[in-house]
Length: 121
Image (cartoon, rainbow, N blue to C red; front, side, top):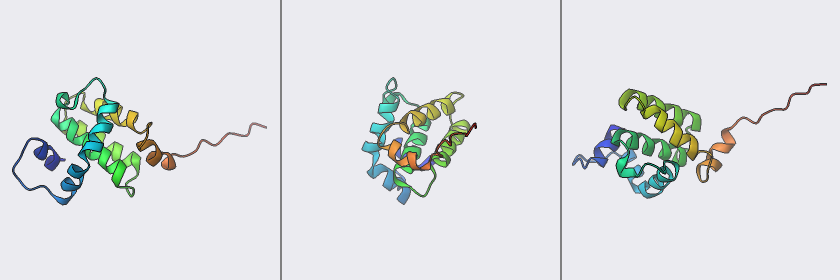
């Protein structure tokens, strides 16, 4: 997360492989964030929150071995630790909205536990 934050802050340190992968998909990732935070243009989102969202959306899209709930929970925990008082709520809202829409919906749906109807005979 710190490396992604540094990249967004125009750091001159070389990015790691993971950050390079995220950067290569940044347009798609940012589109998902923008569509799910319509009142917040990317340039107005707190840089820490944006780095956390980018990491989480990348994990949801490109790391199928990471369960979606884990990626979202980790993003919320990062927001609580490194963000502002409202960051975790913002991150949770954006990711919660994103997983209900394509392309993330198709990724998350198989991980949802189907609701079993109760037999009340």
